Amino acid sequence: MERYNSCLVTFFETKISGIKADNFIRNSSFDNSLKVEAKGFSSGISILWRKELDVNIIQVSNQFIHMIFKFDYHKSSCYATMVYVSPNAKKRVVVWNQLLSIAPLDNEPWVLGGNLNAIVSTNERRGGTRNGGLLDLGYVGPKFTWGRRNLFQRLDRCIGNKEWINMFPNFLVKHLE
Image (cartoon, rainbow, N blue to C red; front, side, top):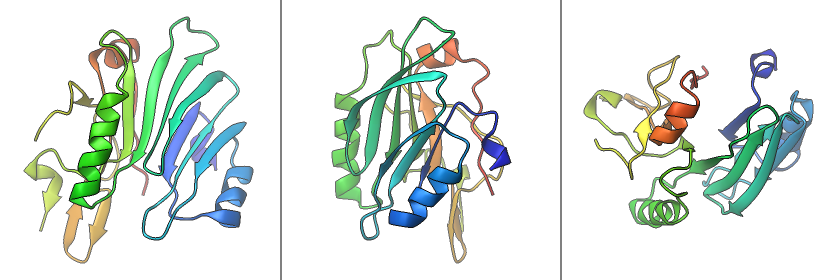
């Protein structure tokens, strides 16, 4: 768990549920957590955060967790939405409409991250577009986050609005192995 020691918050698509997920969360170095259980082929979502963050959960569904948070040392609040968007095109449209309906006001920082199950350009696929004024925040680490046989794609990402980027110019997204 050393790789998480400098993070204040982390989120991930669990692909595990029940006791396995509970044990992973319990063995992490985070103070707080929220878990949406995996159901069938739909992966769950887990968010873990440290006590330095004041987190208020606004909305939870089987495909996203929407919250507002504030750092102990920062006066402004920020919105964050962690997602697992279904690979099913019809379900994906429904989730994106829900996400756009909960978007904060234009002047409020917002980051949306997780498995978006969408590529934004052809160089993210081997073998775009902007979403509602949200810009891709880039990454370090492996280029592709999903693969099957000879197809590899970057489906996981963080996107944020200009206010988020201005508030957190050194924000870093890491793709883990």
